[in-house]
Length: 327
Image (cartoon, rainbow, N blue to C red; front, side):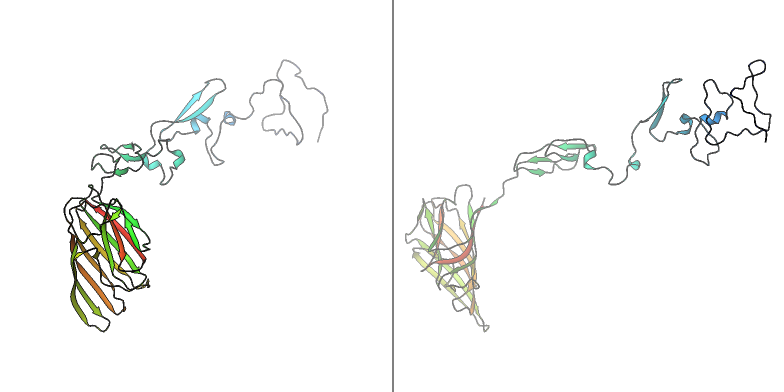
C-alpha cells in the first residue's frame, strides 16, 4: 500500500479539492481526530438532524412532528427559527375515565375549613357543610338539600342521676325532681343489703326526709320455691313512715340480688304523690324467687324534690341506682 506523508494538501488550481473517486472508501482510523474550522457540507443526509422513536423507526422526523399530543394535551413551539423549545401543556378537562380508582389522595384535595364535611347540593354539586358548634349533631335536611349541624332535639326521657355503688345506711338523692318533668323512673339493679332486711324508700324535700306517717301501699307478691311450689299473697301498709319496694331480701351476698323499677308521678306538685313498683329477686333463704308489683301514695300535699333509700335495719352493701325524667 502506497503512503504519502504531507503536512498540508491544497488544490493545484482554484479552490476545490477532491479526495478519492466515486465508489472509494475513505477510512479515518481509530484515534484520529478531524477538526472542522470552517464549513462542512454534504456529510450524511438531512435525516441526521432528525430523530427516530426507536431503532425500528423507518422514518426520521423533527421533534415537533414525532411528539403527538394526546387528549387534552397541547404542544407549542417556542422561539421559532432560534433556540426553539417545545412545550407540552394540559388543555381542557380530564375525563373521569382517565383517573384511576383510589388515585386521588388527601394531599391532592384543595384545603378546606376545619370541621367542614363534604356533601352535595340539590344540583348534585359538591358543597361544604359548615362546621357546627360543640355538642351539635349532623341533621338531615331531607332530599334535595345538604345536611346541617344543629342543636340536638331534647329527649323526652333523660337520665338525671346515677349512683354507681349504693352503700351505707341511706342513699339520698336531693334536687332531682323539678317542674321540668312530670314523672320519673327509678331503676335499681344488683341491689343487696348487708343482712336479711326489707328495702325501703321515703321522699325528701329541701335536703330532709319526709318521715311523717303518710305512706300507704299495697303489693301483689308472687313467688316460686325451688321445689316448684308457687304461692301468692299481698304486702301492704297504711300510714307508714316509709314505703317498702320488696319483701325481706337475702343479705350479704352479691350473687343473690334484687332489681326494681319505681315510677313516680308529679312529685313536684303540691298534691299527694303516687308511685308504682315492680321488683324481683331472692328471698332470704335463697330458695324462693319473688316478684312483687303494686304501688302506693304519699298522702301529703307537699312538693317533693328528692328520694332516699334505706333498709329496715343495717346497711346497704351494693346496687346501682339510676333516675330518669319523663316529660
